[in-house]
Amino acid sequence: MNLKIKNLTVEIENKVILKDINVDMTGGKIHALMGPNGSGKSTLAQVLMGHPQYTVVRNGQLPSIKLGKYELLNLSPDHRARLGLFLAFQNPVSVPGVTVANLLRTANAEKNSQEPRNGKKLHNPALSIIEFNEFLFKKTKNLNIAPELLRRGLNEDFSGGEKKKLEMLQAEILAPNFAVFDEIDTGLDVDALKIVSDSINHLKKQGSGILLITHYLRILKFTKPDFVYILVKGRLRQSGNYRLAETVEKHGYKRWLS
Ligand SMILES: Nc1ncnc2c1ncn2[C@@H]1O[C@H](COP(=O)(O)OP(=O)(O)OP(=O)(O)O)[C@@H](O)[C@H]1O
Ligand SMILES: [Mg+2]
Figure (cartoon, rainbow, N blue to C red):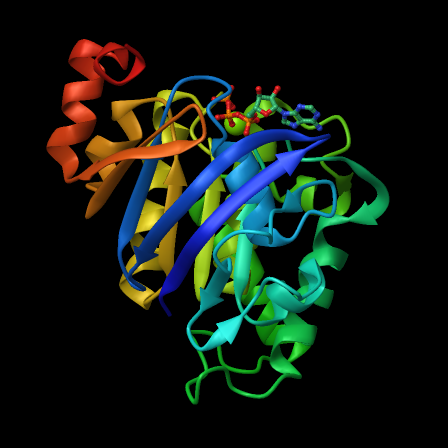
């Protein structure tokens, strides 16, 4: 499914963080978003998911965030997730008392109870509990996650890298229509980075659209994004292909900052 953003300006506490964002992200492709610290990348991710803390400005041209044919702007985060939008957080929160296995089992059951999305059920057919456990075990193993983590509270005392891999596991289980990864590569060791990149490529192969927010070329070398965007001071300043990311790696952001 395509993710189409139109006329998006966002404020927090009367401070404009994102200014007139317009971008049409094709489904089934990898879109990389880069930009200096504080430029608004995570804000965009949070706004896509419907975080209530941010105000979408509505007094100019009509803003819109569309996933396929669905307008998301007035929908709750929960509703957006049900339509197949997924966000892996830059800083995943801990939820003590909710085990990873339970969360994933519930999310999967919830997903399977829904109508096919967009006329086509993505990726994972309805699974029995036994089938789901096998599926979960396989995915856990592929991501080189210790199975005992599944029995612990979500992100409770997880290492930085374990948290990121857990976000990836959730994406694999949910097989979203569009997945946003906010710095999924930060804190991963070299082997884990390769594994997580493979997993992103796998999602793409299955048909998920992907927005990959990152500071580093490393993950982009493995995932070869179809499109690269540069966000500076809340504005999308340039779009291009993989070579744009190489330019950033080489020269930094100074050409957009002056
Ligand atoms: N709740 C908030 N209150 C005030 N300012 C905020 C809030 N959330 C974000 N901001 C500001 O909005 C700007 C954009 O922040 P954001 O986290 O989106 O940047 P980013 O591009 O993701 O940066 P990084 O690369 O460091 O993760 C920053 O100046 C930040 O301080
Ligand atoms: Mg950020």
